[in-house]
Amino acid sequence: MRPSLFLGLTFCCVWGLMAQNKEYLAATYQHQGESLPYRLLLPENYDIKKKYPLLVFLHGAGERGSDNALQLTHGSDQFLTEAFRKEHPAIIVFPQCPKESYWATILSREVPQKFSYSKRPKRNPTLDLVEGMLKAVLSTYTIDKSRIYVGGLSMGGMGTFELVYRNPRLFAAAFAICGGANPKIARKIRRPMWRIDHGEVDRVVPINLSEQMAAALKKKKAQVDFNRYPGVDHNSWDTVFADPTFLPWLFSQSK
Image 1 (spheres, rainbow, N blue to C red):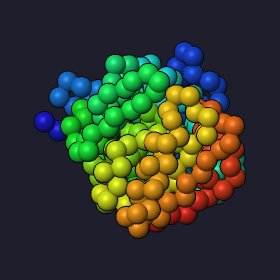
Image 2 (image 1 turned 180 degrees about the vertical axis):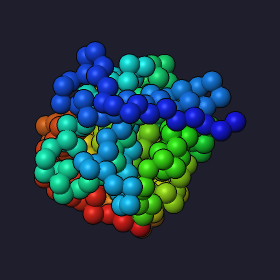
Image 3 (image 1 turned 90 degrees about the horizontal axis):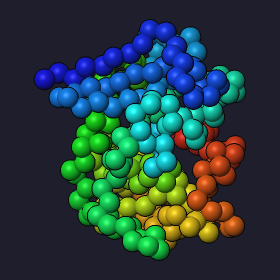
């Protein structure tokens, strides 16, 4: 069965969606009875004769659902600024994880927060949908395949590690904010340029998870920029998004 891609031809307004995010087109990827809502931002004056970088942004656990709006809560604004749209014309995609699902394969969670991850995270129906959505976007728009990026925060940071594991040659760069994964996967995910960020006093996802991943990747000769933030709790994404070097670093990467 061929996947179907449904895109609106006009901008959509969704109840509860902030007015500044109205430029994100509402879309749904469907395949074999399953669906994945997502939001897509095109460059201003999108030109089919040009090729654009593509970023897949994976949200955190608190933004799961089916309203196709909550996933824009954190991070979407930074791609709407006049400066960004002028300097980095790109296609930005925000898929939304179903309420009872997870971007990453978590084997167990304990209290206090301890996460156990699979060494071979290949069976994940939610990421199957993300990959299908990604293929649909690649076939619909003119994408520079040497400049495909992925990143996310919290659950999305965990999903970023796993999506790169499943597609080790696809991405030019990846960023994981307050995430984690099994260090055993480091060898397979060593090819993209990595940025890993974490608050030192994170009470939701312990910083040692990012420390372990950064160390494992560096051991495999990956290029990793690991940043730790003293006094910062789980919302370390606010610090990352305020960093003026973050987006220029990301969009300068190429395979």
